[in-house]
Amino acid sequence: MEKSSGKKKIAIFISGRGSNLKSLIKYSNTKKSIIKIVLVISNNFSAKGLDYAKKSKIKNIYIKYSNKKNFENRSLKLLKQNNVDLICLAGFMKILSGNFIKKFYKPILNIHPSLLPKYKGLNTHKRAIKNKEKFSGATVHIVNKKLDAGKIILQKRVKILKSDCEKSLQKKVLKIEHKIYSKAIEKLFTNY
Image: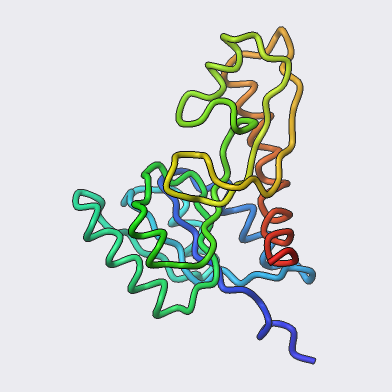
């Protein structure tokens, strides 16, 4: 039985170093993987993640973001051409419009470095430490029109130690992100 034909086609949107992209590529190459990454789109020409995509022979495209509408229209065209079933935002530092979300009409996942609904947006680690939180973590959620407010698919927490600073907490949370993103994708497709 040919299993690869049943794999879900994924597009990953990135802006930076691409560590979550790297872990998803690794997962996609395992036997148990239910995904095939067919496209990587970046709004940043020098995003390190584009190099990972090239090395893994995944179609990768830089689209200038100076015009949001143009970026979204070009992205939608590429998503359609590649029959993408799911978009994963992995360190994509732009907010997609409600119009884009509606036009794509399939799930879009995001991974966020906090235990949502706490600490939406930026500087999550700094805020968690400042507020003397005992735990932080990562959340994979469905993207909707409101920032970091979509249905939560998976969360995992880490303990914040007294000795933790922004950087050490970021490292701990990133490790968790790499573990839960692929699990959240599996959960999404088994529940929908």
